[in-house]
Length: 67
Image (cartoon, rainbow, N blue to C red):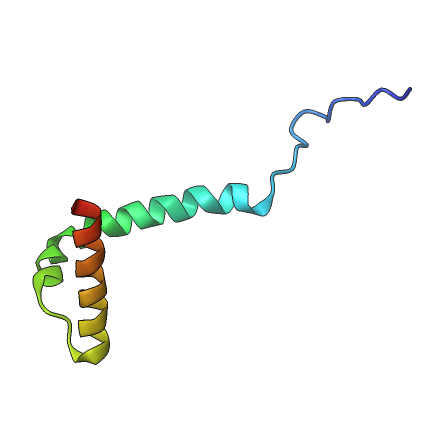
């Protein structure tokens, strides 16, 4: 039976996503923090037929979830 030796110190390799995910999470939180002043724009009615459809669907989902 073969024994596996532990990797040399400092030689471990992380998958690519292990380095990218914290960077993305930080960027997302920073964008939310910096864009917080524009939250009033979300109260305005969306323009166009597509926007009205999305607003209607979101309203219906909120009604179902909240009772």
